[in-house]
Length: 360
Image 1 (tube, rainbow, N blue to C red):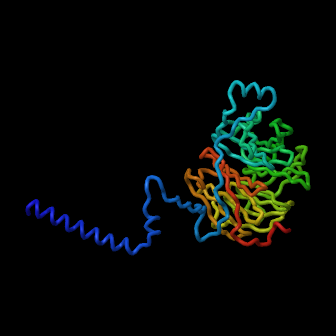
Image 2 (cartoon, rainbow, N blue to C red; image 1 turned 180 degrees about the horizontal axis):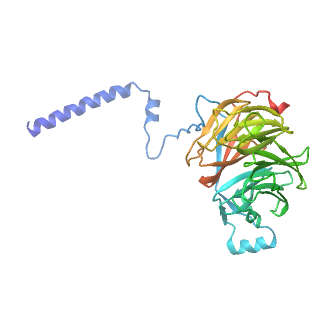
Image 3 (cartoon, rainbow, N blue to C red; image 1 turned 180 degrees about the vertical axis):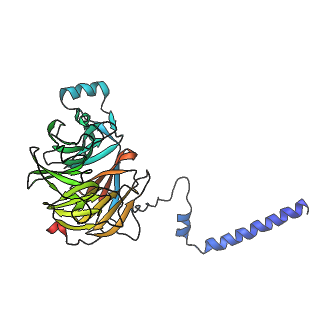
């Protein structure tokens, strides 16, 4: 084919395409055409992205990612703090390395970091952080279990040291709870305000040791064995009103007891493998973290309604959940230990409230 004929053929194709495009554009309104075409001076407005849903579409939405804490602005107090700010500036930060416990009261949250052997007091409003002196140096091994009182005094378990430490708000030791005959490996602790008792879950002896506030051991709740009211490997303890929730990785996964240890019911068999922390929200739903697959399972009474998370480092994913704390403002804080962070979630209601233990 000659170059002349080739040029004529290409011209005919261009004319045909232009005619077809003209017919297609002619079928569109001028307004549609104006919106479809942009110039360098006028860009089409960005379409807002849908809020990503945390969880499966066939399950109710109960948590929504709201933030991540990996660092805090160091807060210095008094004349020493003023001098430190002059030397270091106001931008110095503290970075979390392996947070293993988190809890608080009001706008104050405490974070226990096992890698740094430190206990931090964190202000949720201005994201400032204070290292509580030598408080974290008290522990023989990795601490775990944290319970904070309204006056910001707090309890922390030392499993390797076979003791529970009670600190004031500034990290000074007030008292130590130990009982070599009955307390071998404390893994979690709660305070019973009504009975003025400290309850410590033991992961080795598989019972709950009851102390008075002054540190005198009084009694034990539960015993090693199988069946209701018995335990084989306690991993977590939570108190809600007049109920105790005890997690176990070998026996009935989570048992609810009254404050004297009487069995009420159990749940999680078949859905939980290694529970590590328990919290309850204002909608009466129970959140239980599972070490085996890095998820948070949500129960409405004893019915599993959602499985959230999974292994990973993206927001809403976890690498070893070691503790959880639900603040009064509806924020759930999750110690995502091996990801070196605390994740924050908004608790939302997508299920009706069902009457259960909260009204007892």
